Length: 431
Ligand code: SAM
Ligand code: SF4
Image (cartoon, rainbow, N blue to C red; front, side, top):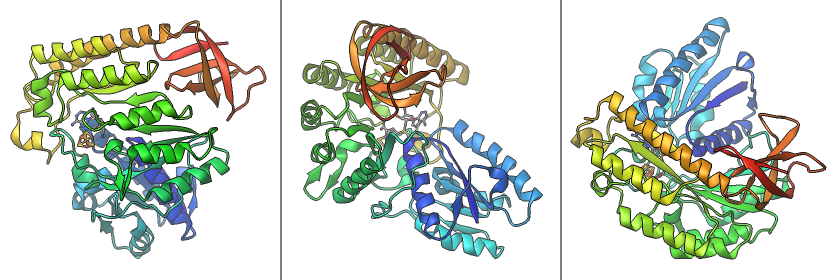
């Protein structure tokens, strides 16, 4: 049987798809990138915002065209949307298999039963499942940079967020399996690993915390770069920041989602920090690692957000000067605390207006941050040809900024030093 999987949402989902391919390969399934060849068509889905789900409903209708055209084609929905909607997906009569994020080991059995004509569902969440023993089948094509999940789920219950309900309680993976996986990818030629979790700073397995895990992975080989995501402002420890400073191969970049610059909104979001705390963390990071890249996530128009709250978000972004940000209009998600107890009362047009202001400010800040790199020399890991101009190569600097530079004797998967001569708000142009 040939399996085709489309992946939506975060990097964690990309990594989960790799785990699914590994489980299915163990049962004789073959991966295909051609939907028309597939006997099993699956989407690994995201529920974080409503528009992510709407897109997937559209894709299910497209999958139906394949199902109608060829005998025996099955459709499966994996991930957060499977977990959130459960039977509602089966009730459409379009979907044959529904499997939540902790149910992937049961996929071979679910598929076998579905082939007999009985739609199947497993959405049980687990307190233990980390897929720690499974070596994911890498689906990214560059062969330079790999993602490794170090934990699953989330215990934070931010009031806007559906993740704790779709991915269950937080659990950390045995560090030895993480180090083993990092060694395997390094032996396979990869030069960079990104350690993934919803809140990496709360990683804890017996006496190993995140700082210790970072040093274990960084200690594998100085030629293996280490990145991580996502850090939470209330949990990122001094120890983690000092560990980053100590190892040249731990990349100097922190993704530190702030969500809002207003204390009142942060409290309603159930984020466990204040604006002041956030700014102090940034100041501390910059005092220990002066060139640290900093990126963030921002939500515009959360419940009850006033123009004053919005202005606080803009002023925080102005003050910090992030290199880059993921910026979203608040999307009310069924089942979350905000959905149950608060009014989604900022009109859509106003949310978008505020979002556009946030984006505009961030574009200006990004350009400033990128311009400040002009004239500097940076060490870059070459990822491959640039998408815009295939005669050029591209790769990231330690601070996560994307660099584009002439090929001139440089090759993919090697480190090179480049000089920044120009930039856009998202790319450093180098020689
Ligand atoms: N665990 C990470 C954290 O705490 O920052 C991020 C996880 S979440 C999948 C990624 C981002 O989506 C969040 O940082 C937030 O900005 C955004 N997000 C989550 N729920 C949202 C919602 N209901 N509406 C809009 N954006 C949302
Ligand atoms: Fe969602 Fe908050 Fe957990 Fe991030 S930390 S996944 S935003 S609940």
